[in-house]
Length: 370
Image (tube, one colour):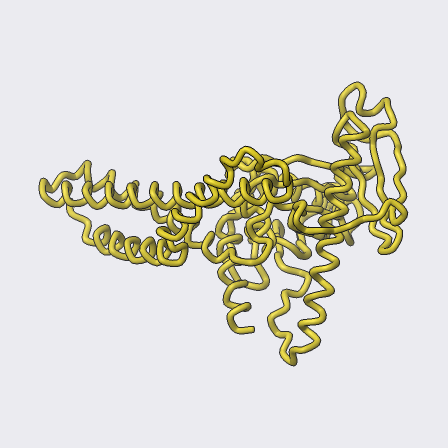
């Protein structure tokens, strides 16, 4: 049976995809990719490692965008042909197949549309995420561990590789903090919207009287530094301590002094890594975390200088950004965008795409108004 809404939706998708192609400027992107391929094929490319890293990274991103757009265009053209077939033969099976394909294509084009909103200086970077328990005692530590699972499940759903650098376990349950890297293009631009304080309201599983407990955990999202960032850290500015790893681990992880803690003396920033068996690997990972923290310090100082020139600071996010209520009702609500859902179990299992997409669009609106 014919469905007139499907052709209308296809027309809207065509308009959206054409807008994405225009924003990305696909002809120019292809030219840019071709020039980068020529640079990447130079025999002396890796004589300058910083430039080689830039070239290969830019080429990978350009090729990825081109492939995604071409795939979306093919899918849309195929769906148009399927709808024409369904209309011509009034085929019920074809209409049902078209309706199913339309839902999937809408989601894919919507995701690509959000990607075009990630145009910040560091948005294309990989992400470094730190989760810390805050007020709420053992419930807060448990909540921090729940958030760690939420974000790692989100990464798994998207096929994004991630690596946990450091986990500090709480005494009774949960974690005090955890730091992990998300190794995917645009991970920072996408997940930076998650930065802030996350609030959980539930019946505490740690309270013998079954009372309701409110607990808090903080999420920090930083861009992973690259060689071109030029964050110089003199050896005299850091103190390096080694210690034995704690918590769950393999045979050698907990029996050797392989964990590394680095203190940046001028700022007091302390980072640690205990995920790897090798002290050298842990030191390298900890230095990457320190580089990202120092880059954020520099970015914050630059923002403060810019904000000092502005009279309107209404666009600032604030700290508490999302509330998760499991009792007396079920609801997750973003306090900035007002987006909410009653499916709390799905959210806690990493299904936060709607929150992320809505947040990115909200952030762009704030930046435009600013």
